[in-house]
Length: 144
Image: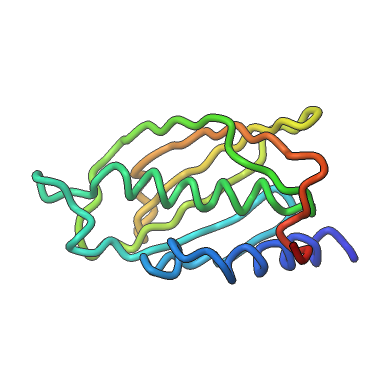
């Protein structure tokens, strides 16, 4: 199977059992080798005491895109570390998109940047994640 097919198969297998995404209405729209895009509508229940997006939900959306981007090659890969920088507030009703892009892969490690934007293109947060592949683990697309 080609790279695009492998990436799509891995994403479909992961999403089928990703209860967090299903429960929060997070969709994974685009997946290709080393890249993924996830989106969600910021609900009223996802805000903090200031009436803006709770940082945990912004981190979660970015982490979803990161997870799908680093699992596009048929090898089970997990987060080793991640950090987020919040740049602007998001509010209930905002449609948010997180776009993950692989910056570097070396050995079993990878570095991914994720940008979270509102529908109007305004950047809300920047996230950087470091991944670690797990040799010997079945890929997301293989039966366990």
